[in-house]
Amino acid sequence: HVFPFSPRKGTPAAGYPDQVAPHIVKERCRKTRELGVQKRRTFLKKWLHQDMEVLVEETRDPHSGMLKGVTPNYIKVLLDGKDRLQNTLQTVYIEHLVDNQTLMGRR
Image 1 (tube, rainbow, N blue to C red):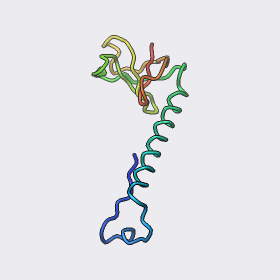
Image 2 (image 1 turned 120 degrees about the horizontal axis):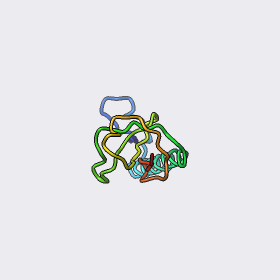
Image 3 (image 1 turned 135 degrees about the vertical axis):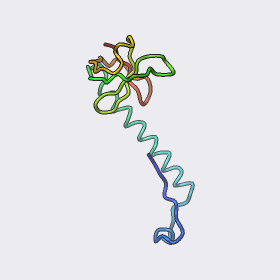
């Protein structure tokens, strides 16, 4: 999460000289968010073509209808499967990135 500084009346920081211009703050926030996306993608790519333990959740992904789960390090994973796999731990082979938050796997 990126939160730009917002001066609050009565706080010491509100009176600091040489405040950063709003357009610069906005640009720095944009760059920081972009860096976060790049770093997240790099992190997710480390898990490609590996087996991971996934806790399959009780509900399916509403967009794809696929089973969804989470790894011990909080990575979201989608996979095909029957409802009987819900609420179980499964070893899942990670095939590819779905987006900047989710991996696709298969049992």
